[in-house]
Length: 188
Image 1 (cartoon, one colour):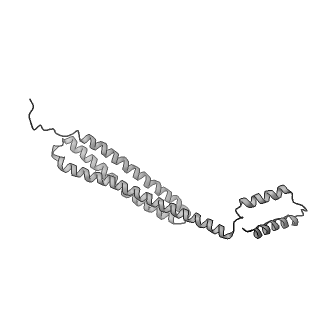
Image 2 (spheres, one colour; image 1 turned 135 degrees about the vertical axis):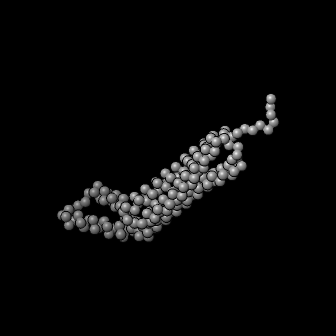
Image 3 (cartoon, helix red, strand yellow; image 1 turned 90 degrees about the vertical axis):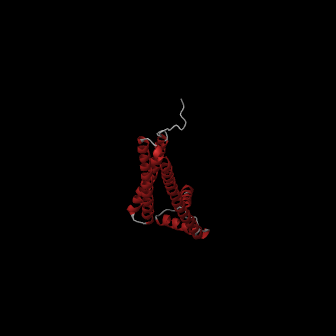
């Protein structure tokens, strides 16, 4: 708001008070009015207001973009860790299959099951991430709540996948103690 507009606002306020029958305005009430006028944000020019709104909009767009990128990277990382672990375990199991005791084979199957479920949870988290973005893009009143629910579900699924990968690693470490030890050189 430029100086002419500010004067117009003050003159309108004075005219309203005069129409109510008041003959004078106290300094305190004028200061209070100016303070309220300042806090309502009406002291910006239209160009300044548009610039401020554009900045706020661009900030929101960048925050959404960075949130989507961070979520995408988290999902890719989770899939890489769980899928890579499953592939490495399969490669290891192919060469060590015959040397494992029966309980070692059972531990190997449990480890593969944990990693498989982790991959499944990561895939589900990806689907829930898509749904949350869909709901956030819509403008109905219940869509924001649905987007929040989908977003938190996706976070929980990724955390569950990481928990299963950790459990699989613990199971695999126990499996390393379950080999049949064959001595090549008999020691008396």
